Each structure stands twice: as structure tokens, then as C-alpha cells.
Length: 96
Ligand SMILES: [Zn+2]
Figure 1 (cartoon, protein in one colour):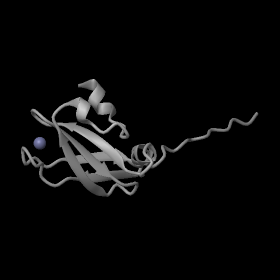
Figure 2 (tube, rainbow, N blue to C red; figure 1 turned 90 degrees about the horizontal axis):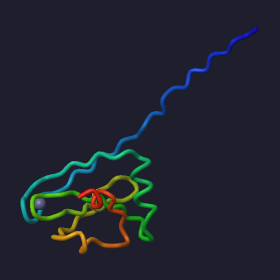
Figure 3 (cartoon, helix red, strand yellow; figure 1 turned 90 degrees about the vertical axis):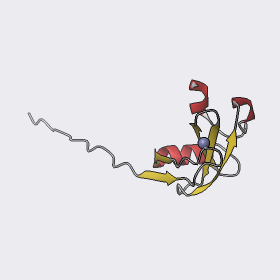
Figure 4 (cartoon, rainbow, N blue to C red; figure 1 turned 180 degrees about the horizontal axis):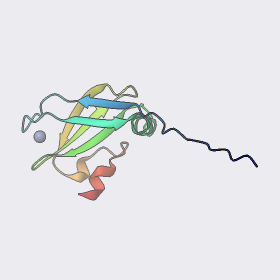
């Protein structure tokens, strides 16, 4: 009897680091680290191929936009969840 052992190597994850400019309101810089999978999923979710990540700053929210290579495209500041663009997946917003 031959026992075969198959070792499955963990798939190497490509990580994207998105660094923002300073926030228009509080001057904070943000660094977002996403896996390649997350970046692709988020950019595929919109017609324009623009992904978005939502961050809470003190009394405002920042939506950071990026393309499918993880390149920072810019951001917008909103004060309430209702102002968030609806063509963008912002699952972080739901938790808050
Ligand atoms: Zn801010």
C-alpha cells in the first residue's frame, strides 16, 4: 500500500499597498493593504473598473479609489453614509 502525502503549499498572496495623500479635512494619511483578490473583486464590482475602500476618520468618512493594479486614484470625503456613492461597494460602511 502506498500512502501518498500531498502537501498543499499556501498560495502566495500578492498584496497591494495603497497610500493616500493627506485628507482634505484632518490631514491624515492612510495606508490600505489589500490582497490582489480584494483589489480585483472591488474593481470588477463597478462598470468603470474603479475600486473603493471606505475609511472612518473622526467625524467624516473617506472613500479611497484605486484601479485594478492597486494604484491610488484619489478620494472623496463624505460626512454621512448616505452620501457614499452607490455604485461602489463599501462594506466597511455597514459595520459602522
Ligand atoms: Zn480625514
